[in-house]
Image (cartoon, rainbow, N blue to C red; front, side, top):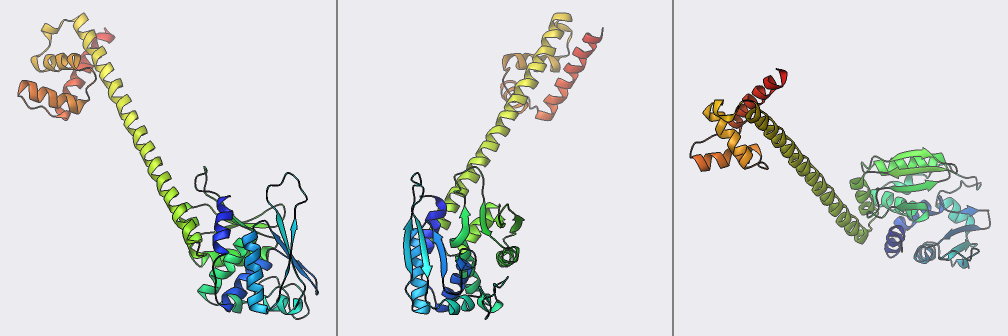
Length: 309
């Protein structure tokens, strides 16, 4: 089962107050239904979602709905569940702010449906159950989206999401509009807002693991880059030293530079810091990394003059 279906299955087990049920049903049916004055139909591939809508309708409006199993595509792994409401249709359409009293579609939900934080959470939960999805955090990118057919509804969903500082965006699609989140932290917050607590724990565990892994990779890359730089610098120093020895001989070099040259040839893989510590220990004469760098600069200048002659 996908991560999205896991979330929806978890959400389907949540109970709530009648006010929350009305907000959740409104968020769901406004984004996933077709209707006439006598019938409301919607479908879902998640049987748990179908059962939850059935329960909410029964407890809120004291009606039973018809559930049909559809599977027209023989290659489809999951069934599709068609739910048909044919009782108290005008009441439900107006009560959930799907239409006005004349059964004309309302472009936006009425504010009294979403006038509290719990109701907003419920409405967002219903919209997500209807047409929402979240990438599994194990995949290469973080992404949460809710699809709606109408721009006005999309703007409402964006506003409600951003009430929680989620920085959601909205873009037109070929059919409808997509409201989406890309930031991992914001997606985790959204899952928490709609009360999918188990999914939050899974998401955050994977996110922390990925962040730690990425940090480790960056540190390893940085360490490798530093190692490559140490090797490159040491090889250049050894090249300059060999040039000086071959062209001038080491006896004509001042004692301090001669000492550095001998230790570099003896420890070709040591960094400047390591080499300064080795010289300090073996000669009992303290030399800092900065002092060592200054001496190598003199050696470099000697080699440069030899190359120019």
